[in-house]
Amino acid sequence: MRMLDSEEAARRLGVKLATLYAYVSRGLISSERSPDGRRSLFAADDVERLARRARGAKQVETRLATVTTSVTQLREDGPAYRGVPATSLVASATFEEVAELLWAAGAGSWDADPGVARVLAGPLGAATSAHDRIRLAVVLASAHDPVRADLRPEAVARAARRTVATVVDALAGPAPEPDATLAGRPAPRAAPAGAPGGTIAERLARRRAPEAPLHLTRAINAILVLLADHELATSTLAVRIAASTRADCYDALLAGLGTIAGPLHGAAGDVARRLLDEADVVGVDRALDETLRRQGAVPGFGHPAYEHGDPRFVALRPYAEALANERQREVLDGVVDRAAAQGLPPPNVDLAIAAVARAAGLVADAAQTLFTVARLAGWVAHYLEELQERPLRFRARAVYAFRP
Image (cartoon, rainbow, N blue to C red; front, side, top):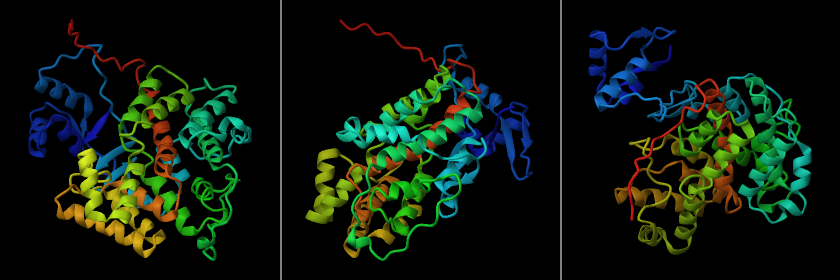
């Protein structure tokens, strides 16, 4: 039986906790204690039935499905992956470990397909953007998988590990020349077994410098961990819809990649970086004023899921400050302080990613690239979960309106 915790059940019903418990006492919702005995759980079917009654809605076969998930819960302290707060994993887990937690499919080797990187090192990948290289890498990885239609969880997880590693290696390309500003800093820790090219964070960090500094590797890993999943974001829903048709994992990932490419989704961190760049040149006040004039909002601030501020910004900010020079820290502090003084919403994770990318001297589209690589993990988790649901359950009905 699907069960919901008290906060989620009350949210779905649009009532206070006291009302929820009143429904239980009246026998309208069945309840039981959680396995650890610390909280109450409520039957999801009962909650949905009451919610439909409150809306005056009828349950029909063609209604848009309600998605019940055990992958990620959005809470005041940020996303929790299978009950574990993401902010608590930032300093203690690698991105690979977080992915395995989300997939709940056991551990495995994160080796890349070397043939894909070789193909993209040629003319095909020479003039493509990072986003295009990611999509090409997924297409080529699928072409190299002779049993891509195997939808067993262990097969999907194995393909996912190889695909993520292949994407990252395809992004890396030839190593750049050493950066003198990074000389003398500590090298990252040794790669774990099963990761011949290093961890995913280390591989991405080497796009900046062959001997990536430890601060950079840690910052990139923190970004990947914090952005691995965020419940039913638009791109994640696209992946689940593809999974409901029983598309293979590669095609489902491509559905997510097509959706995250929108400027209102995956590229938000790059837009926030332009705000920081502008503030450095013309000053904080003028940069904010001109941004508001052009866009009507300030990128990197506010998030509908976090009324009191995005905990992911708080968790990631120290990594940005460790990489930044004094001037970069002043600009970030100035933008955050001025926004608060103007009564704007608190900063979100996009601003923190922008600050990391700017401090580390990463390429202009680095924020979108890191966001996309991170979210591959969450997409796979939701893909696996959707395979357990009734196929083709996502079917919305249109309201036809005649327009002459």
